[in-house]
Image (cartoon, rainbow, N blue to C red):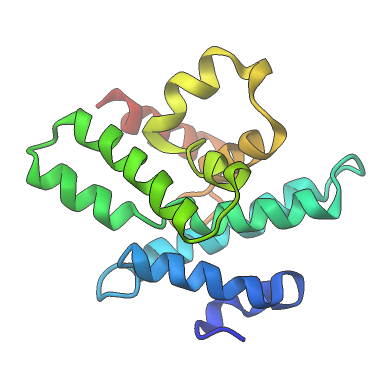
Length: 172
């Protein structure tokens, strides 16, 4: 059903859809040496995102599964972003170009538009979209962003610690 044993906790929920997750990680180069921490981060974000959607009864089972999928692939192209950013000397336009390319690759891999948009609700792409018109952002995007923001590497640190690391990140 899936090659990566780290996905076992999601096996009953997502079944054969996990193969698409693995294909996405492969496309992003995350199975190469030195990048497995990104996979572990995405798994932690997915677990938290799923937990958040199950706190209240207003979220449907479908929404919970979509949140798992979005969180499992939200940083699938982090390696490509890091490499392109380094190669450009840190030019911020490169990240915007990478975000556009990532969207196209995700759509070509068969991900729905909703899930692709949710992957753009994290990191630098979230700054303008999420924080200027929060009322216009759908629940899937909000929960994906929240779960990623509350996760540091593959841990859920105290809120103060996470807020400090986010402050440092966005000061750059």
